[in-house]
Image (cartoon, rainbow, N blue to C red):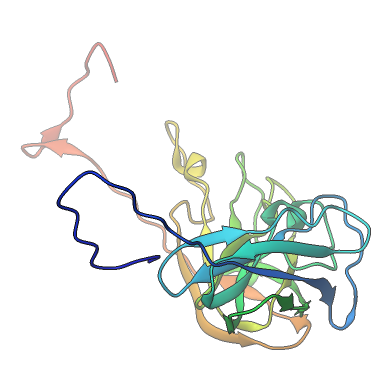
Length: 239
Protein backbone atom coordinates (compact mmCIF):
# COMPACT_ATOMS: atom_id res chain seq x y z
CA UNK A 1 0.00 0.00 0.00
CA UNK A 2 1.22 3.52 -0.82
CA UNK A 3 -0.96 5.25 1.81
CA UNK A 4 -3.44 3.87 4.30
CA UNK A 5 -6.62 5.12 5.94
CA UNK A 6 -7.15 8.18 3.74
CA UNK A 7 -10.43 9.88 4.60
CA UNK A 8 -12.10 11.35 1.51
CA UNK A 9 -15.04 13.65 2.23
CA UNK A 10 -14.80 16.26 -0.53
CA UNK A 11 -13.35 16.86 -3.99
CA UNK A 12 -9.62 17.50 -3.95
CA UNK A 13 -6.15 16.24 -4.77
CA UNK A 14 -4.28 13.32 -3.20
CA UNK A 15 -0.61 13.16 -4.16
CA UNK A 16 1.01 9.73 -4.09
CA UNK A 17 4.72 9.07 -4.10
CA UNK A 18 5.79 5.66 -5.42
CA UNK A 19 9.04 4.30 -4.02
CA UNK A 20 11.03 1.95 -6.20
CA UNK A 21 14.10 -0.26 -6.07
CA UNK A 22 16.06 -1.24 -9.16
CA UNK A 23 17.55 -4.73 -9.08
CA UNK A 24 19.84 -6.29 -11.68
CA UNK A 25 22.12 -9.28 -11.87
CA UNK A 26 23.60 -12.16 -13.80
CA UNK A 27 22.01 -15.61 -14.05
CA UNK A 28 24.45 -18.52 -13.93
CA UNK A 29 24.29 -22.31 -13.75
CA UNK A 30 26.31 -24.00 -11.00
CA UNK A 31 28.64 -21.01 -10.89
CA UNK A 32 29.30 -20.87 -14.64
CA UNK A 33 27.78 -18.99 -17.56
CA UNK A 34 24.31 -20.16 -18.56
CA UNK A 35 24.88 -22.41 -21.59
CA UNK A 36 23.00 -21.95 -24.88
CA UNK A 37 19.93 -24.07 -25.58
CA UNK A 38 17.70 -24.78 -28.56
CA UNK A 39 14.87 -22.75 -26.98
CA UNK A 40 14.47 -19.89 -24.54
CA UNK A 41 16.08 -20.65 -21.17
CA UNK A 42 13.34 -19.23 -18.93
CA UNK A 43 13.09 -16.16 -16.68
CA UNK A 44 13.45 -15.04 -13.05
CA UNK A 45 10.32 -14.31 -11.01
CA UNK A 46 9.80 -12.02 -8.03
CA UNK A 47 6.78 -12.66 -5.80
CA UNK A 48 6.08 -10.05 -3.12
CA UNK A 49 5.04 -11.07 0.39
CA UNK A 50 1.96 -8.90 -0.22
CA UNK A 51 0.94 -11.14 -3.12
CA UNK A 52 2.02 -9.47 -6.36
CA UNK A 53 4.27 -11.31 -8.79
CA UNK A 54 6.30 -10.36 -11.85
CA UNK A 55 8.82 -12.07 -14.10
CA UNK A 56 11.85 -10.62 -15.79
CA UNK A 57 12.24 -10.66 -19.54
CA UNK A 58 13.12 -14.00 -21.08
CA UNK A 59 16.76 -15.05 -20.74
CA UNK A 60 16.93 -15.96 -24.43
CA UNK A 61 18.37 -19.10 -25.97
CA UNK A 62 22.02 -18.03 -26.01
CA UNK A 63 24.49 -15.44 -24.81
CA UNK A 64 25.13 -14.07 -21.32
CA UNK A 65 22.01 -14.30 -19.13
CA UNK A 66 21.17 -11.21 -17.11
CA UNK A 67 18.11 -9.33 -15.93
CA UNK A 68 17.09 -5.88 -14.78
CA UNK A 69 13.82 -5.06 -13.02
CA UNK A 70 12.18 -2.27 -11.00
CA UNK A 71 10.12 -3.24 -7.95
CA UNK A 72 8.39 -1.77 -4.94
CA UNK A 73 10.46 -2.07 -1.74
CA UNK A 74 9.57 -5.18 0.25
CA UNK A 75 10.18 -8.86 0.87
CA UNK A 76 10.28 -11.10 -2.20
CA UNK A 77 10.46 -14.78 -3.03
CA UNK A 78 12.83 -15.13 -5.97
CA UNK A 79 12.15 -18.05 -8.27
CA UNK A 80 13.06 -19.59 -11.60
CA UNK A 81 10.38 -19.62 -14.30
CA UNK A 82 11.51 -22.51 -16.47
CA UNK A 83 10.69 -23.22 -20.08
CA UNK A 84 9.11 -26.68 -19.85
CA UNK A 85 9.42 -27.12 -23.61
CA UNK A 86 13.20 -27.38 -23.22
CA UNK A 87 12.87 -30.98 -22.06
CA UNK A 88 11.03 -31.84 -25.27
CA UNK A 89 14.13 -30.94 -27.31
CA UNK A 90 16.32 -33.66 -25.80
CA UNK A 91 19.13 -33.46 -23.27
CA UNK A 92 19.48 -29.97 -21.79
CA UNK A 93 21.85 -28.29 -19.37
CA UNK A 94 19.35 -25.72 -18.08
CA UNK A 95 16.56 -27.04 -15.82
CA UNK A 96 13.14 -27.23 -17.44
CA UNK A 97 11.17 -27.03 -14.18
CA UNK A 98 10.33 -23.90 -12.20
CA UNK A 99 11.23 -23.61 -8.53
CA UNK A 100 11.57 -21.11 -5.66
CA UNK A 101 15.19 -20.11 -5.10
CA UNK A 102 15.49 -17.66 -2.20
CA UNK A 103 13.72 -14.99 -0.15
CA UNK A 104 15.13 -11.50 0.16
CA UNK A 105 14.26 -8.04 1.49
CA UNK A 106 14.75 -5.36 -1.18
CA UNK A 107 14.96 -1.82 0.17
CA UNK A 108 17.55 -0.08 -1.99
CA UNK A 109 18.89 -0.33 -5.53
CA UNK A 110 21.48 -3.06 -5.96
CA UNK A 111 22.72 -6.25 -7.57
CA UNK A 112 21.28 -9.71 -7.04
CA UNK A 113 22.97 -12.47 -9.01
CA UNK A 114 21.04 -15.73 -9.35
CA UNK A 115 22.84 -19.07 -9.57
CA UNK A 116 20.77 -22.05 -10.72
CA UNK A 117 21.56 -25.65 -9.84
CA UNK A 118 20.74 -28.55 -12.12
CA UNK A 119 20.68 -32.35 -11.94
CA UNK A 120 20.06 -34.85 -14.73
CA UNK A 121 17.76 -37.76 -13.92
CA UNK A 122 17.14 -40.63 -16.29
CA UNK A 123 15.87 -44.17 -16.20
CA UNK A 124 13.83 -46.99 -17.68
CA UNK A 125 10.07 -47.25 -17.44
CA UNK A 126 8.69 -50.77 -16.99
CA UNK A 127 5.27 -52.31 -16.40
CA UNK A 128 5.00 -54.79 -13.54
CA UNK A 129 8.76 -55.30 -13.76
CA UNK A 130 8.83 -56.11 -17.48
CA UNK A 131 9.35 -54.19 -20.71
CA UNK A 132 6.38 -52.02 -21.66
CA UNK A 133 4.57 -53.70 -24.54
CA UNK A 134 3.85 -52.08 -27.87
CA UNK A 135 0.39 -50.54 -28.19
CA UNK A 136 -1.77 -49.10 -30.95
CA UNK A 137 -1.83 -45.62 -29.29
CA UNK A 138 0.73 -43.58 -27.40
CA UNK A 139 1.49 -45.09 -24.00
CA UNK A 140 1.62 -41.84 -22.01
CA UNK A 141 4.44 -40.07 -20.19
CA UNK A 142 5.76 -39.28 -16.70
CA UNK A 143 5.24 -36.05 -14.78
CA UNK A 144 7.71 -34.92 -12.08
CA UNK A 145 6.12 -32.58 -9.50
CA UNK A 146 8.54 -30.59 -7.30
CA UNK A 147 7.47 -30.04 -3.69
CA UNK A 148 6.80 -26.30 -3.43
CA UNK A 149 7.66 -25.74 -7.08
CA UNK A 150 6.49 -26.54 -10.57
CA UNK A 151 6.18 -29.70 -12.61
CA UNK A 152 7.45 -31.04 -15.91
CA UNK A 153 6.70 -33.99 -18.14
CA UNK A 154 8.97 -36.38 -19.98
CA UNK A 155 8.67 -36.97 -23.68
CA UNK A 156 5.75 -39.18 -24.70
CA UNK A 157 6.52 -42.91 -24.54
CA UNK A 158 5.36 -43.50 -28.11
CA UNK A 159 3.62 -46.62 -29.35
CA UNK A 160 6.52 -49.05 -29.69
CA UNK A 161 9.91 -49.91 -28.24
CA UNK A 162 11.38 -49.87 -24.76
CA UNK A 163 10.55 -46.81 -22.70
CA UNK A 164 13.20 -44.53 -21.17
CA UNK A 165 13.33 -40.88 -20.14
CA UNK A 166 15.78 -38.11 -19.26
CA UNK A 167 15.06 -34.78 -17.58
CA UNK A 168 17.09 -31.84 -16.28
CA UNK A 169 15.68 -30.81 -12.91
CA UNK A 170 16.40 -28.59 -9.92
CA UNK A 171 17.44 -30.55 -6.79
CA UNK A 172 14.49 -31.20 -4.50
CA UNK A 173 11.78 -33.62 -3.41
CA UNK A 174 9.51 -34.93 -6.15
CA UNK A 175 6.37 -36.93 -6.73
CA UNK A 176 6.42 -38.97 -9.94
CA UNK A 177 3.11 -39.54 -11.71
CA UNK A 178 1.94 -41.43 -14.76
CA UNK A 179 0.12 -39.24 -17.26
CA UNK A 180 -1.71 -41.98 -19.09
CA UNK A 181 -3.10 -41.96 -22.59
CA UNK A 182 -6.89 -42.36 -22.46
CA UNK A 183 -6.76 -43.26 -26.16
CA UNK A 184 -5.39 -46.67 -25.16
CA UNK A 185 -8.77 -47.68 -23.74
CA UNK A 186 -10.86 -46.00 -26.44
CA UNK A 187 -12.57 -47.84 -29.21
CA UNK A 188 -14.48 -51.12 -29.35
CA UNK A 189 -12.58 -54.14 -28.13
CA UNK A 190 -9.67 -52.14 -26.75
CA UNK A 191 -7.62 -54.24 -24.32
CA UNK A 192 -4.27 -52.55 -23.67
CA UNK A 193 -1.60 -54.07 -21.46
CA UNK A 194 -0.59 -50.63 -20.09
CA UNK A 195 -2.74 -48.40 -17.82
CA UNK A 196 -4.91 -45.78 -19.51
CA UNK A 197 -5.67 -43.85 -16.30
CA UNK A 198 -3.28 -41.37 -14.67
CA UNK A 199 -2.05 -41.69 -11.10
CA UNK A 200 0.89 -41.44 -8.66
CA UNK A 201 3.80 -43.87 -8.96
CA UNK A 202 6.49 -42.59 -6.55
CA UNK A 203 5.95 -40.15 -3.69
CA UNK A 204 8.41 -37.80 -1.99
CA UNK A 205 11.62 -39.04 -3.62
CA UNK A 206 14.62 -36.84 -2.84
CA UNK A 207 16.64 -36.01 -5.96
CA UNK A 208 19.80 -34.16 -4.93
CA UNK A 209 22.37 -35.32 -7.48
CA UNK A 210 22.41 -36.53 -11.06
CA UNK A 211 21.67 -40.22 -11.44
CA UNK A 212 19.23 -42.96 -12.40
CA UNK A 213 15.64 -43.39 -11.27
CA UNK A 214 13.88 -46.34 -12.86
CA UNK A 215 10.09 -46.21 -12.67
CA UNK A 216 7.86 -49.30 -12.62
CA UNK A 217 4.18 -48.92 -13.45
CA UNK A 218 1.80 -51.36 -11.71
CA UNK A 219 -1.50 -52.28 -13.32
CA UNK A 220 -4.54 -54.53 -13.09
CA UNK A 221 -6.73 -55.81 -15.91
CA UNK A 222 -10.48 -55.52 -15.37
CA UNK A 223 -13.06 -57.08 -17.69
CA UNK A 224 -16.69 -58.03 -17.51
CA UNK A 225 -20.10 -58.24 -19.17
CA UNK A 226 -22.63 -55.42 -19.23
CA UNK A 227 -26.28 -56.43 -18.90
CA UNK A 228 -29.64 -54.75 -18.33
CA UNK A 229 -31.74 -56.20 -15.49
CA UNK A 230 -29.76 -59.41 -15.75
CA UNK A 231 -30.34 -59.84 -19.47
CA UNK A 232 -28.13 -59.25 -22.47
CA UNK A 233 -28.02 -55.65 -23.66
CA UNK A 234 -30.27 -55.33 -26.72
CA UNK A 235 -29.09 -53.93 -30.02
CA UNK A 236 -29.77 -50.25 -30.75
CA UNK A 237 -29.58 -48.03 -33.82
CA UNK A 238 -26.76 -45.96 -32.25
CA UNK A 239 -23.86 -46.81 -29.95
